[in-house]
Length: 442
Image (cartoon, rainbow, N blue to C red):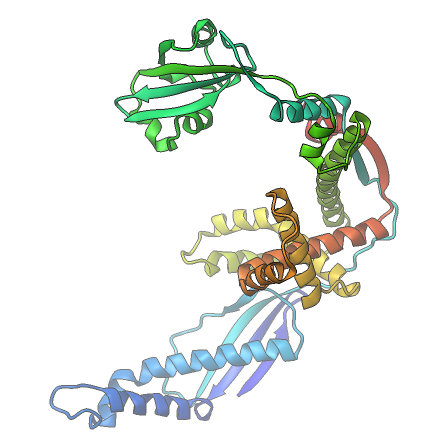
């Protein structure tokens, strides 16, 4: 076997593999012998079919299979040994019909070569690192939410906007009969709101379902149904009012603070406000980091100039899927993917040049931290180490989960690297202004 390389440009190459029969004939012979042992052909005892008959029927297909295996194995080996970095996968160059009985066979593969590139992180730039702060309104709303959560339910005569209404909902056509609690903010339509505001405990209303709830998600939650059940509901739905309650605001005393933060962790409203700010701004930091990562990604793609083997990649996209694409569809897919390809190459260069590697212990510790954080969110903090280690082991044994965590950890490492190596312009801004400035909302 002989393997040679010919470069047509710095981004395109052809690998030629010349194979002689001696490279594969022993394997073909072994497969055919095995076929002969197992063949059941009328008129012959099992294992006694003439080899000539076996060869006539199977030799060409077996030869093709064994040659393909040999090509794939040696092409992969050659690329690794020669340290050839490619984009996509090698594409076979289709020639005239092969003579599988020839003494020599020649195959050629087209390669798209990864470009050489340099990533410049030293020059100053205008990338903003946002420090997002909580607004007084957000802090006050959070306090009010906590006070409502731990407040008392007081029966009332008629519903007002924030009162909680418990009712039985019925619709015979859709076979619905369920009890649930809602408030007027989840109801739409002036006539529906007017009817509910006049209702008292014991009132039975018959309202048009079509415009009753503010959206389908609200309807499915309150009626305890799936979305596909909605079309079965006919015009009218019956609402039997069972309770009308106002949830009063809890007093801000030590008992209230202890329920939220644990015994003696917070002792005043000022301390509570500080805790809320810390919690909110920790969440905002994640949004700020994501924005920073997105902006740095765009900056690096724009500033790092290099060519890609675009014609090869379009051809590869056209032929690599389960169903072949048209040339135009492949070009459109390449245009959508080009930015991602460029950033993958830039990211890979940064990781390689700066040894941003991940070892098993790092990944294991990261997985443990993520699990602890999730457990805490669901009120299951303080798991015994043995139980926690068992969960980590199960997560790490799942290849998809391990890969997902590895990608998250690498993103974290890259973000820390960028913060240390980019000259960033820091900007303090409250959350509402951040949303307006970055997303044009608010």
